[in-house]
Structures are given as structure tokens and as C-alpha cells.
Length: 219
Image (cartoon, rainbow, N blue to C red; front, side, top):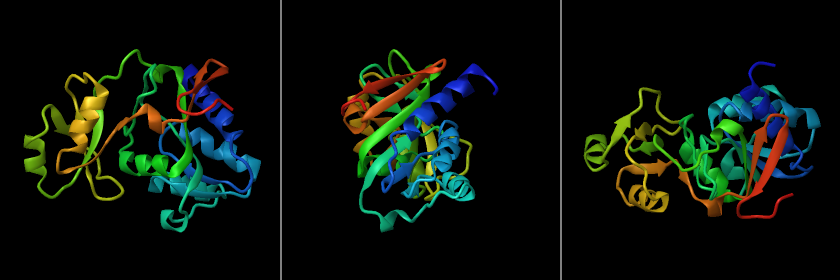
């Protein structure tokens, strides 16, 4: 296989797959690490029901024979498994590099347990910019005037038609910044995920996978 980072992504994904049991409802995230999760999950041939956080994940899962359903057919999830752009020592995450942050957060809050899979490069001493944002297209200029240090990303809109942008300023206290984004009209969602949303983080270092319990017991 390619680089050491790719091998770590694969190791973390394969460790997470072992947490999935027959009969579960599972949320499938988006991104390069989740790309390793899907074939490992398909190989287990479990009877599970899944929701996907992006059309890309849904198409990849469907091609592997993984059953993906509309989100409104499932009222709760046993697990959600996703990657992260940054993981801090206290359990804060930055997510949304793949522009699916709103769906990712909605799936995460619906799950009884949210599992993060990551390679060792995603561990940081403290969160830093950029912080992804999804903005309402209506009134976009007004929203941007009220958001310091935010630039619209030159990418397609989110799966739900939102404009993807990035906060590029100093982060400071993530709790305060998350509250600011949450209180700003026109901000659909932000990529700061608090520790109380995160159950377990699986971070690969070489062939070894560290299991970090954030807000629920390690398996």
C-alpha cells in the first residue's frame, strides 16, 4: 500500500469495523479514512442498516453491497463512524474538510456512540484554523460581513445547497468560537465538534491503534 499515512488510515478504519455488530444501525461518514472503512465493513457481511453523510459515501457503499437508507427511515443510530481533520488532546474535533459537515454533525448527534477514525497526523496540540463553515446562500454577503476572517471556498455547494467557507482567523477558545458561529444568522453549521459529542477516538500510529475514550468507555 502507499504511504505510511494511508496505512494508518486503513488500520484505524479496520479497528472501527470490529465495533459494528449484526443488527445495528450505523452512520457512515465522509472522507479519505472512511474510504477504507467501507470495504472492510462490506467484507464482514453483516445485516445492518446504514445512513450516509454524503452522496459520495452512499454511492461507494452501494457499490460494495452495503445497505444505505434515507435518513428519515431511521430514528436512531447505534454507531456513527467518521474521520476528522483535527483531534485535540481534550477531545475537540475539527471536521468538514470534505464539505459534508452539517450532515456529519446531524448523524453524530443521532448516534448513541460517535467513533472517530484518524491517522496520527490528525492529532494536534491545539485546534487551529481553517474551520469549515456551511453558510446559507440567501443573504450570503450580509452573513460574510458579520463573520471576521471567513473566506468562501472554491468548491461545489454542500449536498444540501449550502455555501462552503472557512474561518481563517485565530481560534482562541473553541467553546466561545462555536457559540459565536451558532448564534450568527446565516451560518448553517460549523466544523467544531465538542468533546461531549465524541465517544471514542481511534488513532493509528504505524500498525498500532490507540483507543481514546472521550465521553464513553473504551471498548
